[in-house]
Image (cartoon, rainbow, N blue to C red; front, side, top):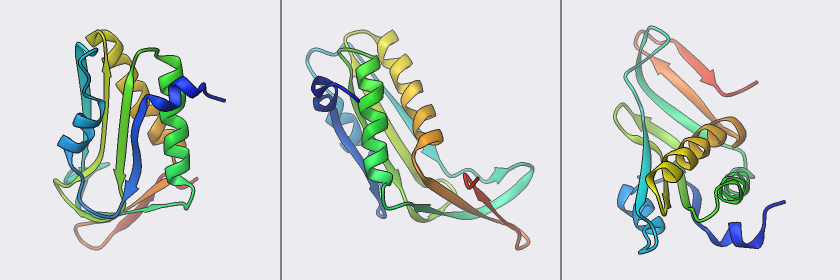
Length: 146
């Protein structure tokens, strides 16, 4: 269970089927008390495991937004004085598209870097979002399904 204070420092947590805005996520965590702001942008790359990727399609479980918020709150609780935001895309994406944007601000850059890394790593492991990749030549692969 996270503290109420941690939940107030999660300014944005969402899963969307429309394009993502880096400015929206960064602006959500911007604060005059923060000396450091770190953002991570996850992009659709043109290859995976030695195969050329044509595009992919993200799917999410109905509880994905709730789980994303819980992950954000847990990271906020573990890193006092941080402000967090995270948005993940679902639907069909092309190479180069933004798939996920996370940002963390903190009084000092070290805090922001540490919390941002923890946020994206935990999000990738705990939020039920799955990737269906399509490869050149017609192959395909699901990623994130156990």
